[in-house]
Image (cartoon, rainbow, N blue to C red; front, side):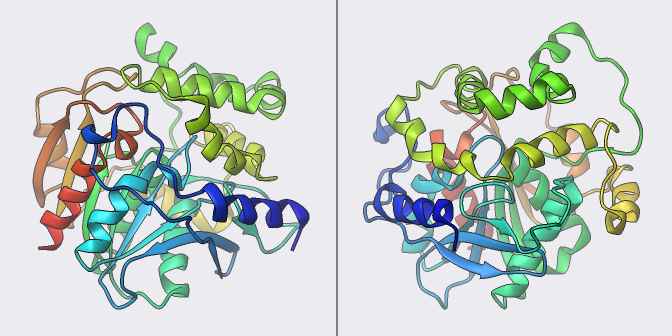
Length: 332
């Protein structure tokens, strides 16, 4: 085991269980993780995935998937209610985060949406899980959506924080209104050589800025950021982030094994599993529409659609009670 991996696991075991939150805990789910979290490792065909596990081992499995640029700490407040209800709660670090590593040191570092979804399937396979419930936001929600599309028989229920997030990575997009383009500045930045160097050199400055601007009503402290910061020092983080944002804008090739998958996803297939959509009312990307028709069309088995007050982009950290309650409702 490399020294950097060993250092990460040591730090995660000591302080990894503290929740990220800028508002009083009373506005979240109540009881959060108290004891230090133990990071476990499991091998898949491509990765060695680091993950945390809570609750009874025989409980129905719930996989919680973080996004960019966050890590497993976003779900700290949602874990206890799920575990207390008897569920086996699994919180993996996505490729490029924390202790998760590629098994082949020479493998191309790619992070297209189909690959991240395949990681979820491989993770479930490695743990011997035939069926799971999924909840995620940002990259994690995208992975959950694609898993539900491609393997609906394996997903009993899905909580989609942010709604339908599958992308067309085949057809170059058209320019959007200025306000929308401005909100995506980081994506255009990462599509330049300067952006790659900037992320390598100033990653923590960039990430902290994104945390603050994407959740303008939520004030993170330095201590809260520091609990997740080691995850972004993963040696593959920069390569995978750059590839993800270049691939989605048709500026970088993806893995050959996912070409047909990406073509199929480009048409925006609906998600045919029971789902609840949660949208943060105070997202830096703008307040969500009150019109539910788009989500109803994308999720034909939609159980509920909720605009969650007091939540920004990092919805599970701000309102873990909403995420846990939605999962428990779907699994009742």
